Image (cartoon, rainbow, N blue to C red; front, side, top):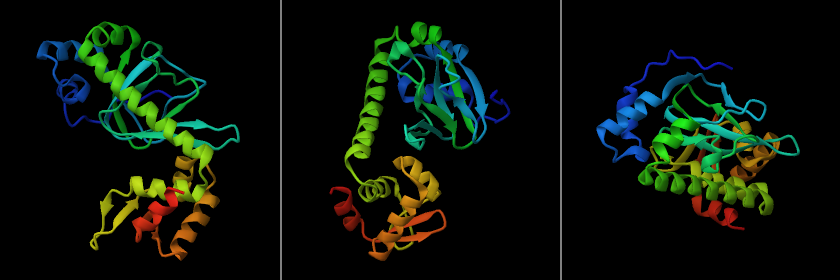
Length: 234
């Protein structure tokens, strides 16, 4: 799919790049060179940025919105490897050790993204040891997260993985001070766990019957985080 270019940026491309952690101590003239080397494009919600059938060696810097990186398992289930927010760096860059030929990237919301080619990455980023160190750290941290997720997938059952996921994602609180996860359907939770929607629904209903959670429309309220933690660590 061809990206659109109509989403108005809240900040100019130059202003945004100067705020990205990766470039936080670059001089103004260095930021200007980056600005000239990046294209600013819009991807609409549901649009695929890349897929195994359509790889492209580019680097994406997410300015606005949310992107989901996923893979299809051997059983044909969708497994969401990570969800990325503004400031995230991702894409296919063999020179950085990033491979996306087996992955999908999809815009979860309308996204505004800066795109760099391999030649510009090599010329403007990898030639600067400050940026190289940060890239190594960022990519290493993300790899560790994915490895932890795959380890859970291999060794833990759905209830334990779901309990851990709820604890990680429920970052907001309601008027009672209880932690809440909202905005995700049972299908989306299943994709984050690499399982089936029916399995997630059954586990959530079990948690509800045990007094651990309260379930609403695209909303899960944690009534007993300690109880969920006990299940997550089994």
